[in-house]
Image (tube, rainbow, N blue to C red; front, side, top):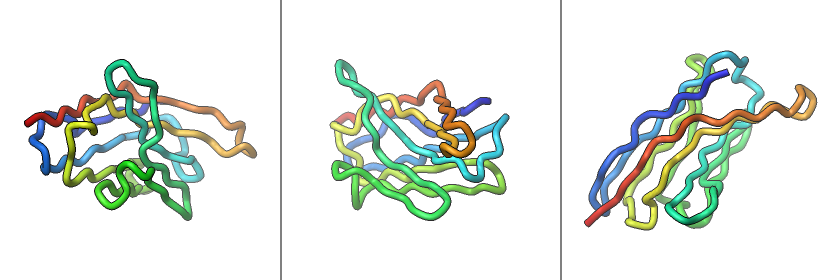
Length: 117
């Protein structure tokens, strides 16, 4: 199983980025997909999550970040608008199978997002 993130980079406050996560080696449909982030010196935190029917974004990014998935191409995306310096972090893609399918979890290698004045 491989999760490969892309789309990170340097951006000024107020700017936008779109992250992509390409999955391979798993069925994808039925997997719970999430984006996490880890800022320097901090723990990894959930940013947004999506399954087959629902999606959710955390309070810190709600209204600015959007998550969606394309099961045909096995990708999950996150559009990040109105970026702030506190959004600076390494962003990770996460996949989790349903409990009925074993509950296996997988992580991508991360992509750096830096928001600087």
